[in-house]
View 1 (cartoon, protein in one colour):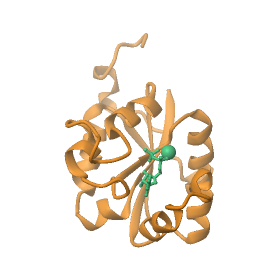
View 2 (view 1 turned 30 degrees about the vertical axis):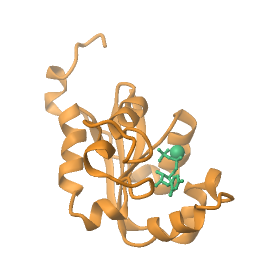
View 3 (view 1 turned 90 degrees about the vertical axis):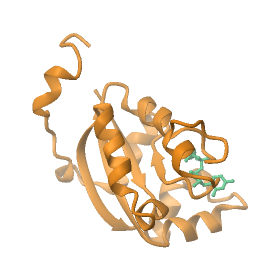
View 4 (view 1 turned 180 degrees about the vertical axis):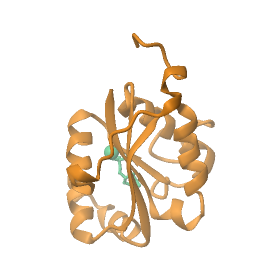
Length: 152
Ligand code: CDP
Ligand code: MG
């Protein structure tokens, strides 16, 4: 089992797409173990996007990601990090394949609706940025026995 951080970005909130995007993750069989609404501060934005802070486009990214409420969540599942990244599609909504979240809902390089951790180290770091250990609610959905075989 693997855990990954997702952010439903301010464009997702403002466009009232939260429910439809959350439904896609639920439909896939991923399991929420944490979920909350928050406003990202410039400080948190710089921590989250530390690898991008020096880029020319970072100031506009910070303005965007701090510009409205976001939903942060932790999803759990088999290979959840790669599964979520595949579901998101390419970074730019213009390039993302139809059928992916960004491909279906975004026509922007920046306003691409959802963040997903890009590896195990990032997932670990990002989950700790948004959630205290006691905010993670381990749970096994009743339907789990009908979502995959016992030995998977
Ligand atoms: O989110 P992802 O890992 O797919 O992309 P990234 O290259 O790590 O970039 C992080 C985020 O910065 C993207 O999801 C976009 O919202 C934003 N971005 C941007 O505003 N302008 C760019 N030229 C590239 C990315
Ligand atoms: Mg990235």
